[in-house]
Image (cartoon, rainbow over the protein chains, first blue to last red):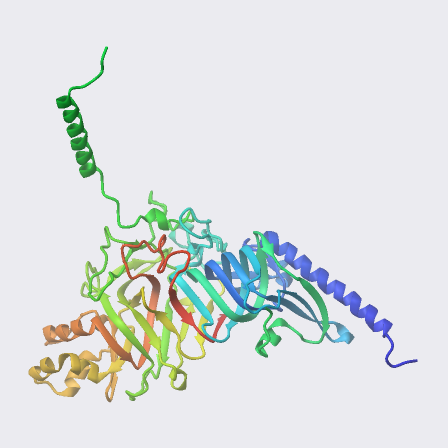
Length: 252
Length: 326
């Protein structure tokens, strides 16, 4: 038997794993799409990573919030703090989203979604009303993170806006509860109107994130999204977007 | 039947109309420099028992443009209306206890303190309330730009930290810290942008002692005090050699001690558009905001540089942001 022939058993196993991972990811995305702002949402285990050469976001906001892991949702415990990043509209120069899974004896596999036109000078991806729950974010190079226009630090997360221009703004787009909720607050005050106290954030007219990557627990895009040349790959080993970005490779 | 008016009656009608117009414009209430409605969120920042659904929003006036110490009015001027989280943000940079005046962490230009209408801490500070409970006497400082030096990482890169546990109860069920850590320098403000901070009185910046003596050398000599006595009075957060750590409370003109007037005179020089070397800093603040140099521009509607091409307000190169449970 040729040593260069197709390894059917391994290929079938890998394909099965690939479809399972893809299904898991899509299910996660689907459930997120309807529940990302709900304080009772369930999320994946946070092993997804993302990267982009540039994210140019209008009316951007970053605020602390709590989310619950999928595993603990049924038991009602284990809330985890995240930085919830949202924007009214954004363009991106390339985008990569990946998830690495340990698949028994087959070892590690990476499922990776990429989009872009391979032109480093264009922001070909567009999205509206999007949000990401991030536990770690890195903007490499200069200017890295560039907050433009009116920038505010110290607002309650409930007071952040992700709608451009003038009032009326969307109500509490980051989803931190106004009223006392024992899942979110240690105690109550102000007659049960906690108003986001203890959850703080940053608001900016425009935010530019350059050479950016990080760990994302979930993402939601409510509005229109354009993802040119979308590819979904199943790759052996750890080939996450974050690992590539740390090595200096960004999608564009 | 003819409706034609004589020339005299036409003139009377026009004059009467003009008079009514002038009277009505005089009686009509003038519009504020900006309207809280522009900042209103449908989301409430309320207090039960109050009919105002935005009762707990705070009023923070903008810094006027140009090289002077004036700010907009708290009552009628262009203002921000934040719902404050109550979480204390801390900016640290440089060597906190260093004695070197050559290790400059940053340069700040055009720094002023807003002491008008104060109601706490010798009436130099102002009471600000948080989203649900609690309040604090805070000092408003404004500057044109704060630029960290390229070599700052070699002796203390700047770090911004916000710990949820610093907010008074009610606070987050899972205590957590948001950390923004540039590898090295970052920049706040720049041409066309003003930056404001609401800081605690105990926040401090370390400046070279020569900055004080350059501004007020004659006054200090006239006081006839030893250098140690001078430093003990001016450098209210401590000093090490020629590094003087100055509390923001002191910078705002809360002179204390037997030579209060002299200290006030010195500090009014420091807080009147000063350009300093910042050797190190420990700034605890609850609110930072940037706005257009033209303070008549409502930041909610007209951000610095306009909505379509806003100016750079905060630039954080090579920066890592993390959120962790504590």
